[in-house]
Length: 138
Image 1 (cartoon, rainbow, N blue to C red):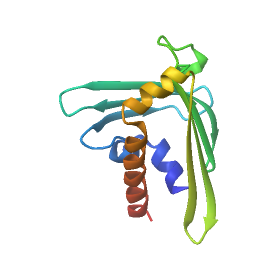
Image 2: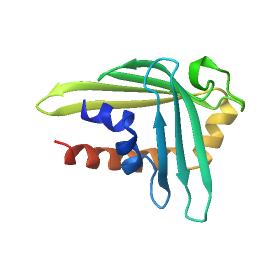
Image 3: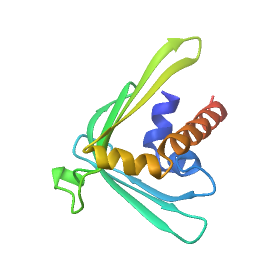
Image 4: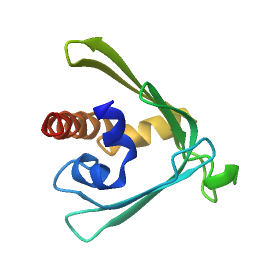
């Protein structure tokens, strides 16, 4: 439940989502199937990267599915779709959670581009930050 909160509460997302030296400037969440999310990241050289998406599935606290193929209320995205994220949070008992994050890219080219951006390392570091934040919420 804590990890799900960290993924769905704007005041928590901004504390862990982006791997340093990037930061998360803001997060706007409409947490429902068809609801939108906008997460704005800032880079160390003044870059601004807004990420727009739509929730496909919201099943607290077990599963969250989102995509950039749509904006809120199922409006098609104005840019080419990049990926769909599938998150599962399985309670293992004793305060432990099996957290699984899957990225399903629309094309092989999109997957390669994401890899070249540092996807694996970035998501790994962000996951470490997610874990550290969740531990402070116990």
